[in-house]
Image 1 (cartoon, rainbow, N blue to C red):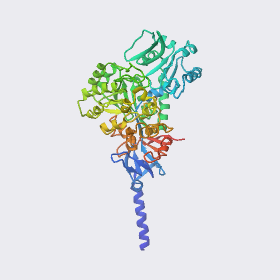
Image 2: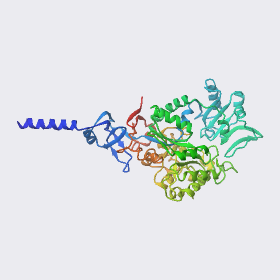
Image 3: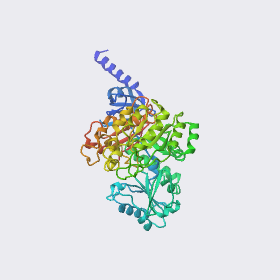
Image 4: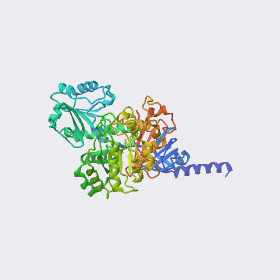
Length: 546
């Protein structure tokens, strides 16, 4: 056989062999810039996916030579990240708030009133429920009172919840239904009375007196809203959420929707602090499926700084004689800690003020007694006394923080705390250094659901207009790499799920997002312009930008 024919024949055999022996996989992603967020923070060009899991990452040449995908994604040089995980939010609460009047961004109480007047014409229930006002955004920065609501809606109950969920304004009709009078008292909350009359302001546990008599939406409607909410999450690249403070009934609804194939969002659920839950769940243990993980309990140590319910060691700088309060007595926290100490369940406690944080840190320390891998969490850890930071690292207590709280509160936080105390507030870098890792979230709907605002607030610590110049307390800003880890692998680790997801590595779930922006290397001004083009969960596309 002539040499030329031998060469051609050999080349054909090689080509045939390479095609014949390429492994069949579900999907091949190539020509991308893939931030794997593995231990080396390595960057790949391509990856192969089979049965919802990543089986290989590497260069375009290697992956395309070894694998043939039923589906191919040519990223055309765009950036791919692990799916974002919101380590602290209220997913189902946000979902079932969708029927309520949105008061976020209102600039005055008059605007709130006008929105409620319009909403009342088409409200789906007799109750008029609004959520999201913040008096700190108004020219008059004091709590409103109920007189205007009483005159406009004398026969319809009205309940307007503050943006942080720790204070509300109720009209007289709602107060009457809840049997609240000027003489009513409650532990862990306050009912505002002036000149012997109710103002309508209820703080923390006092809100529950009204919420307990409010009608709930149907299960079918709740499920619809779960799906609406997940679509919003997908558009921001969220493939997982930690849902903080969920009832058993809500967990059952989530499980049903996930098993029916409708709800694809991966959810780590923390049960609400209910006395009837502890023994029952401790007996049966953690509940885990591919999409749902019920692995913790969410408690509330104190209230919020914006409503002056956060528990401080010294009085508020802008309210002499007032220090806030704990929402339960210390005995309760100690009893729960003792119950959970011998289980795999996490104790996850909301703490905002320096006194609230100290109390929960002390409670945890008494049980944990030094180094451990229980990963008990303090949610928010907003204001920490300078002498207490080491308690996090010494006992492996995990601060779970929300960077946009800093950029939302920075306009007025020093007024609440004073110039010295505020230096130990929103101290994310100092908190990160305690354990070397830290999960990030948003606390939506308290803050915006946007993952890019989370990233921007963590790194830049400014608002969208560039305020303040140079950033807010930049000594506690995070690096871009750490911010990304906090939204991916460290968020997974905070739920004991780091071996399953949070990075794009062999054997892990193919949860990933395709972005139009390289968050690690782009100009600062482009961070808030970033857009998710596609979102994938277990190798299946769940969102495409229209």
